[in-house]
Amino acid sequence: MTTIKLKGDKPLIISGPCSAETKEQTLDTCRQLAATGMVDVLRAGIWKPRTKPGMFEGVGVKGLAWLERAKEETGLPISVEVATAKHVENALEFGVDMLWIGARTTVSPFAVQEVADALRGNKDVTVCIKNPMNPDIALWAGAVERFNKVGIDLDRIGLIHRGFSHVGHNKYRNPPMWHLVFEMRSKFPDMAMICDPSHIAGAREYLQEIAQTAADLRYDGLIIESHNCPAVAKSDAAQQVTPDDLVKLLKSIKWRTSNNNDPEYTRALSNLRAEIDQIDSELFELLSKRMRVAEHIGAVKRENNVAILQGDRWNSIVDKAIAQSKELGLSEDFLKTVLQAIHIESINRQNEIMNAK
Ligand code: PEP
Ligand code: MN
Image (cartoon, rainbow, N blue to C red):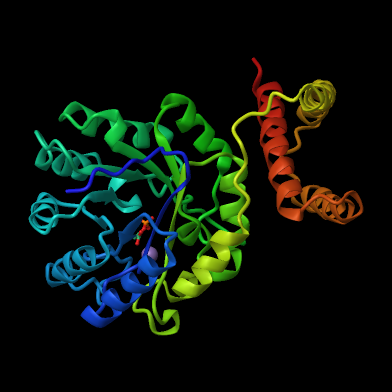
């Protein structure tokens, strides 16, 4: 079994099909990926957790033999998703080097514990843990602890950021919520953080921008789904790329250096940071002022026995903000998110006033 260096001098690149579908598709894709010289680890889903029954649920154990063959031919380590003790047993029999825990598994402590128990005493496999579907960092951290407790050292554990499920419209299939991942990174500062632009994006056209953001935020690697013929893929067709397109994508990404001691740069940066700190403090003062006005409104409504929530008023605030967002060069989604947070806090304040004894 190959030991995978999760945090190396250069970003770790993991690629391969969403699902192993046939021997030809798996081997052809993996051979092309290896020939690029840009891929460090091959991936393929063997057991697929699907939202609805009757969708393509993976080829099962026979796919492991195809991957084992791909590893023999290319010399590259292989990785698969596991969700049960049986999956672990099968994957290890076929010399799988890296296991990953899918987002639908990380949400379930029983399932995570079962997989962890199946790895008790294992000394060489690498385990990557995807963030849970829901934006719950404690659950993600809990999964890391479960694997660490059965004896998987922290340097054999990696994290995969694949975005979070959401309600309502969003450009991405699973919005990244980068700020939440910062929290996870500060809990495990030395652990590799790998970005999965494919499952964040849900569509090929957005892979590049997400991967570039990950590079800008100094992630340690990328896992990107690729297929020898994405158009006919049995799962996640819209987000997979051909090995050729993967090369174009990877070449387009600028990885940033971790630090730069140039005094000119340090001075420029600290000036800009001071400016940001000042603006933040002004923003908070304004917010506090706004909340005091909301409290006054609460008092006036209380006197007149009027309900807090006035639908028309709220709609007109949102419309005005959207119109202004264009002038200000702020995205509509961003302004709506900010406004919603402010609105919730205003309602809470008014509520307190209205119900004060
Ligand atoms: C996958 O990587 O193919 C997969 C199913 O991902 P996730 O668990 O992130 O949905
Ligand atoms: Mn997929």
